[in-house]
Amino acid sequence: MSLTRIHNLSISLDGFATGEPQSADAPFGHAGERLHEWMFRTRFWDAGGTTGVDDAFAERHGYGIGAEIMGANKFGPPGWQDDPDWQGWWGPNPPFHTPTFVLTHRPRPSIEMAGGTTFHFLDVSPAEALETAREAADGQDVRIGGGPTVVRDFLAAGLVDHMHLVQVPIVLGRGVRIWDGLEGLEGAYDVEAVSSPSGVTHLTFTRKIAS
Image (cartoon, rainbow, N blue to C red):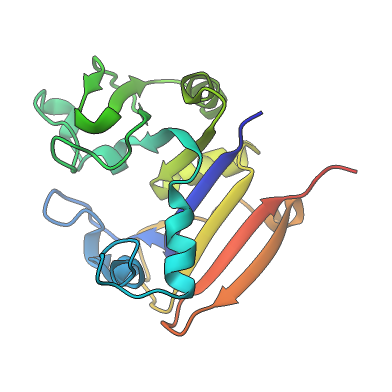
């Protein structure tokens, strides 16, 4: 069976994966781009960027992915459901290049974009969304793309096989936290930490194989 994976999810020292308030002008709220500066400096993001440990982790994002699941707050700012012309943040050729399933309580017809991305809108449970995405992935893995609420829901449901978090040395104080309600989560995973000269720490959680 295909794996369910999370990659390049940046969190602050106090566990927030986004700030507040979110808007069209501030997708990550008061956090701005501070959570993602480590990635912007890599060759994965910019052909003239750095190599090394950050780049090595960042580029794993796309290998073997056949479908993506994301939450409503990743697809657009608050209120996007009221704009029938909204097609996401990414322009006519989004970076996913796979079937992409947006979880929302207000579904709309699918949107076919350039480059192989088709957005489908679902009002279903995490388990049901994963079953649908796996069918679309055709044997490849499914990426849970965020935001933090969706990631937390999939972790709570025991549906994540591999997770790559990047702990960034900033304190946000408010926003949306990853860890709320997930006490003891680490017991189900083998956890590894790799420090980078950039100051971030890469944390990988790999589901333990049942004995």
